[in-house]
View 1 (spheres, rainbow, N blue to C red):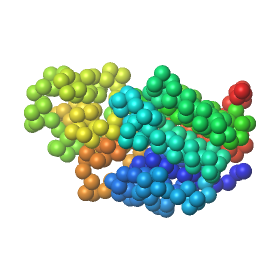
View 2: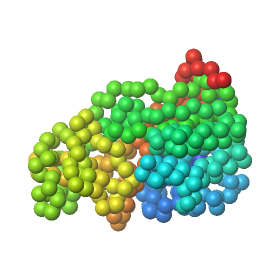
View 3: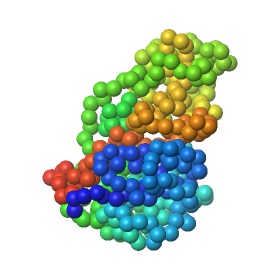
View 4: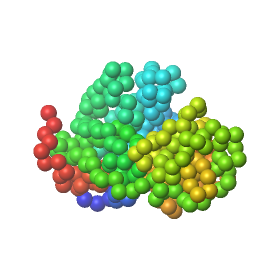
Length: 327
C-alpha cells in the first residue's frame, strides 16, 4: 500500500487543503472549483494539475483520473448560522452539493475521504442534516469519524477558528486505527504574522472611521474588530475567525495598532494566519476584496496537514489510535 497516494481536490478554492495534503506527501491528480477568481491565485501557486473551473454537477465522474482520496471543503453557506439555516433545502443548490460528493464516492469508491465544513454543521436542523450526511456516507460503505478542530489548538496558528472534519475509510480497520490529531500548545503570537509596515491604504488614520475607533483600539497586543457600531477586542491575543465576507466592504477584517497607527490586516497577513507559506503568491491585478474573500474561505493549512499525516500513517498500514473499535 505504501507509495504515492493520489487525491481529488474538490471545492478547491485557492488550494489550502491541497497544500496540507501535499506537505504530508500526497499527490494531487485533479482539482475543481466553480469560482473563476480562485483560478488565478491557485494556478499561480501550483504546477499540474491546474484548477478546472466547472460546475461540479457537470464534471464527468468517469473522466476524473484514478484517485485514492477525495478531499472537499464543500460550501458551508447552506449549513452555517450565517446562511439562514436552510441546509439541504437551500434554494441555491449549495446544500445539495454534498450529494454530488456522495455520487462520486459511490461511482469511484476511493479508499478514503476528508470533508470539511463549519462547526455548526453538526447542530444544524437539530442534528438532522448531519445524520443524513452520516447515514449517506455509511450506506456507501464508509466507516467515518468526525471532530471539531480549532486552528489555535490543533494548528499552532493564533486564529480562533473551529471547523468540523469528517474522515472516512472503506476499510473498517483503517478507520479504527485512525484518529484526529491531538491538541498542541499554541506557541505563536499574532504579532509573528503581521508586518511592522503596511501600505497607507490599510490604515484608518485619515479615514472617517478613525474617530469612532481610536479610543477603543489602544493596545498593540490585542486584535480588534469593528462590528458596524462598536469595537470588539479579542482578549486572548489571537485573531478572530477570518471569514469569507471580509471581502464585502472589509468590515470584518481584524484591526491592529502599531507605531504608525491603526490598520486592518493585509490580505497577505490573513493568508499567513491561515497557515499559508510566506512565498504564497497573489495575482498582481486581483482586488484586495477578492483576496480577503479567498483567505477567509480557505482552511488552516497546518491543521489539514496534521490530519493528512495521520491519514497517511493509517493508509500505509500504521495506527494512530490503538484503542478505538467502531461498532
